[in-house]
Image 1 (cartoon, rainbow, N blue to C red):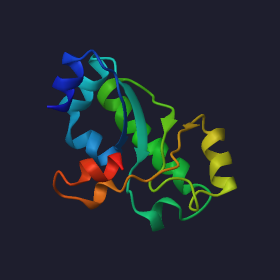
Image 2 (cartoon, rainbow, N blue to C red; image 1 turned 180 degrees about the vertical axis):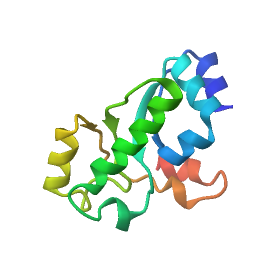
Image 3 (cartoon, rainbow, N blue to C red; image 1 turned 90 degrees about the horizontal axis):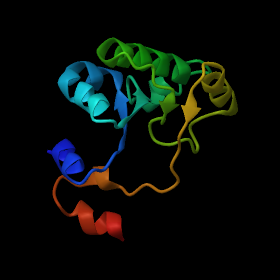
Length: 128
């Protein structure tokens, strides 16, 4: 439904995706690509303890997600957004390793907490 709305309004979006979700929703990911949306990577586990485990783990997760995305779309995405944002989790050495593997890091500074709500209550909360 979201893709239908974006298409109807001629809007392009960036989607940061987890490797397992790319595998599970291949048709939707192919549609994202075919309709000109930006494809980004969000890792594999979304587990704070695994993702930030050591200096190599963020790059390793992104490389695996990159491989999966490429197998589905043929696209080797370089744009990445790490789970839970960079502060305080992503270390200097982890950023260096992401860069060395050719990834472009995208971050955010405000958590809207939209994940907290299971109903439409998130709308006024996010706007506030």
